[in-house]
Image 1 (cartoon, rainbow, N blue to C red):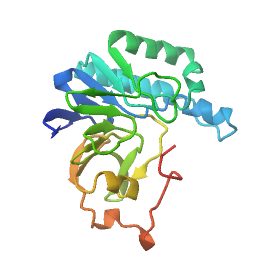
Image 2: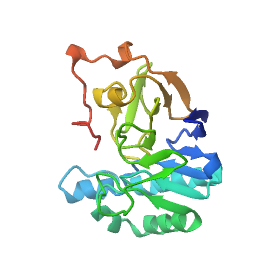
Image 3: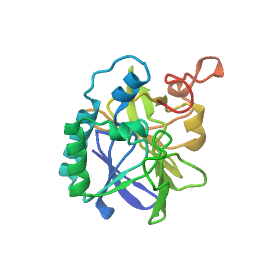
Length: 229
């Protein structure tokens, strides 16, 4: 785990992509995209193994237990679309209900699930919690599923800038946007990334490095568009 501060508040980045806010006894996650395999099949896309909901919720249960957090804050796109919320497998729905019953749970709406949740954003102790980062900040958000390539490995990453803290996607079946993509570089022109995986690692974001250059000056969009799917 990696401890850091953002606008005077102490946070801990977990290898799973969750963010622990000890002073608020809260665990923050973004972009669970529960029901992605069901939504893909429903829309005639490729069939994906139907295990992502259980895997994501099991990991979330483990993080809540490890941190002892009494509040869970989900920063939008918790479901892959509004219909997916009512199409969860029974075992996954039971696990989700158990999580919500054990912790105070706040669901923030995202662009994938705009109708499923009532809260667009909240502000706690000077920090706005929302799905998509917006100037001037300071805010904590998700949406972009940031990833960073280092030593040949492309890893989900937290991005920490002067005004914006962007979480990686927590869901099992999620793509990602390169950290140097203009959509992210505009929000966080300088700062650092915290790589996730088996362990966390903080690295700088030197915008002039080869990590953030795109052939011909054009962005490589691995997920098709500015917003990962």
